[in-house]
Length: 614
Image 1: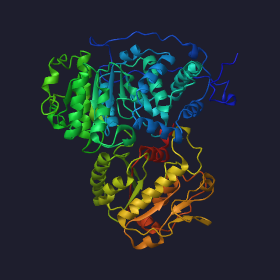
Image 2: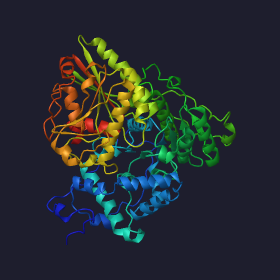
Image 3: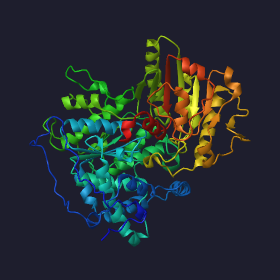
Image 4: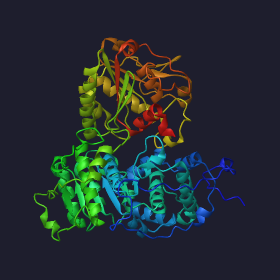
């Protein structure tokens, strides 16, 4: 008898002759992978659930399409934001508790995952990546949950540093989805939203794959984030704080710090990096009221490496604080599990009295072990301070999207692009490819990019191609097409104002004219024509600004066919606009800074590195 399909998936999609492989992700392969005296093992039931026994034999893309039905549409998302502004957030964790139970897990089981829980405004993903690689170097089987993904949603859930395979993602997806779908009538017809579902799925996968630890990156904030269903993490970390997600977290760093400190747990050690005095005081107060011992990480230079040169796999001066935080988190985790490299953790009993001048005590540096040194050196984290060289074209890729991270991005880009330019014998052309999402202040971010003195600025929405059926993993229903186009207009206006470029008669669509800058183009029009923003009066201006309807068209114009690995648009081939073409074609090197949005970065990487889609 055919298994009942989830309601969100059409019956026609069922592939009855295709069976899923039940492969298991490999265990950690680093040094010391053999069983040691400090090793521990867990036992919990891995018997197949009722939903698992009724698993539909669906393909990966079917799972992704079903997952996308859980995305919150733009109007509903706005209503949620309004409720959060009014403080109506108390039900978030209660709902998550119910979803966990309906998915067949118990909250107590999550305690067995030996979790490192990390929040922050910028650097939390990099910190988690450092932690994952260091502990994998110790031979541990690691689970790593992060967000957002760049190319494929599987990137969010990693086993031993690699995205979970398509087969395992599909297998576990339907186990969780079916169980939640079967029980939704008992819970007012509710299914968890996109991020909640993926968080539940990550916990389910980590339990069934029997990881030795899970590194969990907070989604937004901390106190009311669905990852905060975790009750007993081994250690918590707070990376650098800044202004972001203000409609949800608050419009001051102090309010944001209060939210971030919400992941602290009684008796659980926590670490943070240097913060401004205001938000640091809030973190200290949160630690006091919760009963958490918060410590400040030392400078990276305070760690000893026994004569070995300490280098980081992630570029940029700002990564030093992320590395320091990761080292303290990893040492504490290893101490908690009685690793012989470190003495047992000795936590003072009077820790609330140790806070002076509203600053936490500084934890001491220590002598780094070989796995720690190797882990820091070999960490990779795509889309962050990444350089991709393709003949005469160099892509500088960084998903910076806050004031602090854009500042760090500018410093990194200027340093490395100048070094490359000095080694080039001919003219160098620099181009900015930019977009933002959400409520971020694009004008403020663009102002910080002005010192780079770009020759061209290109703006586009986070649409991969004008043929919009390329990748279900990158579908985004939380923002309307009108909103995306409006954001591009706003970004361009802000840049033109900063560079004092006139904006008369900017919008041109092949075969038609748009009357005003707030006119929107329908999707059908985008599929038929190329939308190009060009100011004919810009020819004498240092920086010229253009807008394209999708990422692929923007990259095609910037590279002028000089990157042979960049595939042309799947829709209509780009009609190269003459503006600036000669300079780009004749340049010895084209340096492209791609920044402002991780979703923009993800779209670019999908086009530039086909292996990421495998």
